[in-house]
Structures are given as C-alpha cells and as structure tokens.
Amino acid sequence: MQIGEVAARTELSLRTIRHYEETGLVVPSARSQGGFRLYTEADVARLMVIRRMKPLGFSLDQMRDLLAATDQLDGGSEVGPAEHADLLGRIATYERAATEQVERLRVQLARAEEFAATLRTRLASHTDASAPVEGPVEVR
View 1 (tube, rainbow, N blue to C red):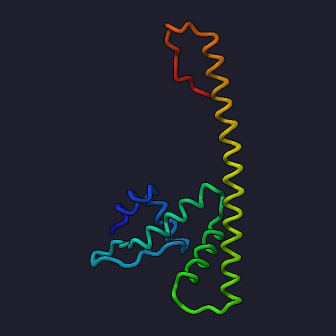
View 2 (view 1 turned 60 degrees about the vertical axis):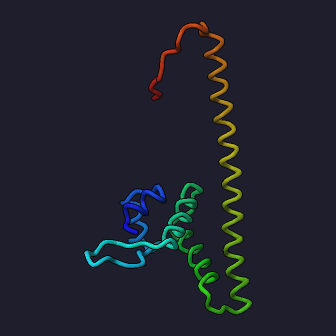
View 3 (view 1 turned 90 degrees about the horizontal axis):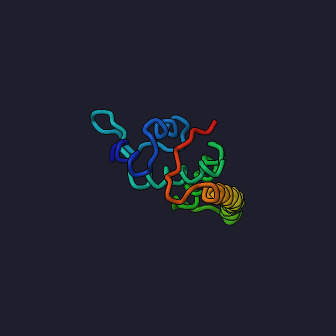
C-alpha cells in the first residue's frame, strides 16, 4: 500500500511516517516504478508499535532498540539460549516501563476527571438550570 493509505490506517501524518523512515525506524518494503513508497502489513504493524510507544514517552533510540529485539526474536533465525534470554529481558524491560507509564497516566487522567467534575459541580451550583451556560471560554 502507498504512504497515504498507511497514514490513514495508522493515524500518523505523512511527515511523521517519513521522519520515522529517515531515522531508520521503518523502511518501506518496496518502491513502485514511479518511486512511491510501498508498505506491507508488517510495516503497518511496526508503525503501530511506534505510535503506541510515542505517547508513553519512549525515545527514538528506545523504539529502535525494542524493534530490533522483536525483529530478532520474530525473524526466524536461530539465536542461542543466552541471546534469546537477553532479547526477552530487553522486551520485559520495555513492558515494565510501559506499564509504569500507563499507571502514571491513569493517575493524571483521574486527577483531570476530578477537576472537570469539580468545575461541573461549581457551574451547576451557580447557574440557573434553565439558562444556558456561556461557552466555550478561552483558557490562557
């Protein structure tokens, strides 16, 4: 598929996908005769891993390291027991980091929801129920 379809499926911009290509995180599987980038389902899956890591605060180097580890494990080539254990350890480290960041985000979300509920309560207590509330208000 071409980059436009990949962008639509991954909800990443064309610019972002090109940036990930420039940094070596994802490489189009082929080029058309006209020079257009062509991607496979595996490329889309790789971009989805990157997209999921980004909001958790992982750096490009960390993304690259995790993708390299998963590529080696999934690549079908034989790896020795020590290397296999090392790859699993690297992936486990990223899993723990992701889990910790998700928990931090849950706390932030809970606080944000509490704040929004407090504002709703305050509005309700100071607003005539039949009168519409002016909005939206620009926050500075």
